Amino acid sequence: MRRYGPTALLLLVGAAVLRISLFSALYLRYVQSGLRPYLVVSGTLLVLLGVTTAVRAARAVPEKAEGPHDHGHDHTHTTGPRFAWLLTLPATALLLFPPPTLGSYSAAREDEQRAAQGVGTFPALPVRDPVECGDGGAWYVTRLLVSCCAADAITSKVQIRGADAPVTDNWVTVTGWHPKGKLGSTAAWPLLDAKTIVRVAEPSDPYEKR
Image 1 (cartoon, rainbow, N blue to C red):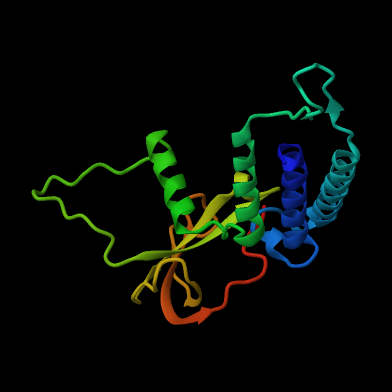
Image 2: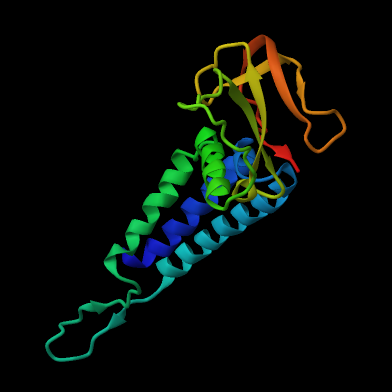
């Protein structure tokens, strides 16, 4: 049965790619919409290659041993170690349970990376002791922007004040406006004094194009 391992892997991966690109819009969790035709073609080719490999494996004639002690046993050559079948597990998981879109964890990771790189400047600390810390209950609406796929995603944030934060990883529409910094300058950035917050369903295309 080991000779059918590559076949199973090709069919599973091909079926998973077709499931997210041809039979649903799940591919938008990972790549831009313009890449859909390439995914469909890739998935189709993988399935066809898997079928071809299966047919060739089924038609393969086992070699007959000719030694006096072999008694006509088949000596079918197989390739790859037995644990190679484990490669079908992630392919099956991809087919049955496609990974979700990037969320708050990815946004937080970008902040940590920027802080570690020393990106940005901070004002001098006040002389009073103790120094008051905190953001006054502010929270952020964050969108992820991608050029090609989720791997190159970056964040775009707007600070929200005047309302309680919703549960993390929920989609909301916030109405309000309060520009911080002089308009038209590089110091200006959006800060919303929230007037209304409405929870909405996750869009089929969760990313903004940049």
